[in-house]
Image (cartoon, rainbow, N blue to C red):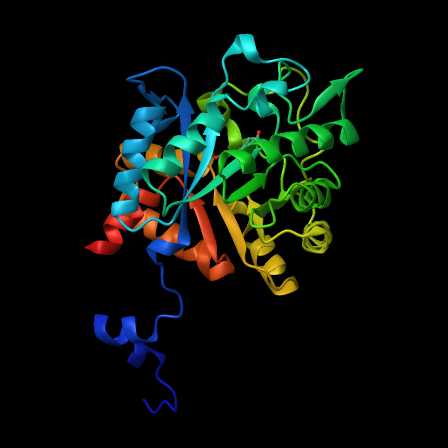
Length: 325
Ligand code: PBG
């Protein structure tokens, strides 16, 4: 057989394959989400996220040290709010002595080099489990944005490096940026969840934080998964309003969106390899149906290949360990 081109030449052995690989995972790609709980000595496995834990603050600090020792650059903090502190204003979200604010300070003090990102949305604090303030059964935009600004300022004040608004209200990026400028937080960044879809894959996360919506769903603020161009509109608007980094979420069923957004903007793009995506791999591996380590690396490489510069993932630790081998 005479062939002018033989593509298999570049696949012949590990040496040539690694030389021509187009995508490389690095430890600096990962953002590790962490779930923090009140109390002491808490190390509670999340039922629908085997191998992932909700920790009290002192255990979280230990975990951040361990992750930093493996080379991790950044963590994304979520807290579980006590039921008695939840209401329809979300005011616990900007309590200067709240669990989030105490966590930011303690982690910064223990591991000053780690970049601290904080989730900004009202759902963990909302008695309705919604990302915003509820009036007559509706999630109201503009009052929610005021609350998100208060929340962001209190995170910046406590020492967060980036706030990460995950709420999908209109105009919140500009409002937060303005408030940062006015209040002397010109060094605090914004990682904007620009294209966040109303997804069933958030289920395990809502178990982790006990934050499932009490009525209805999140479709009046999170995006419709049928839409693609709308993600570009949202992304461009957030860049315009001052976002430093954008986020597409979820990741796996949305690889086309990651690529579209990456091609449309000139800021770094991150993707969130969310709880349901973690749970699927864990469940299949537990059944013996998938090789977990291979599935992790293939998944994360695919997300990066699609265009993500950064990946928030519950597999951060395992992936860093695998990359060291
Ligand atoms: C809440 C928030 C959610 C996630 C991150 N921030 C859930 C939601 O919007 O209901 C999901 C993360 C995951 O599933 O891993 N604003």
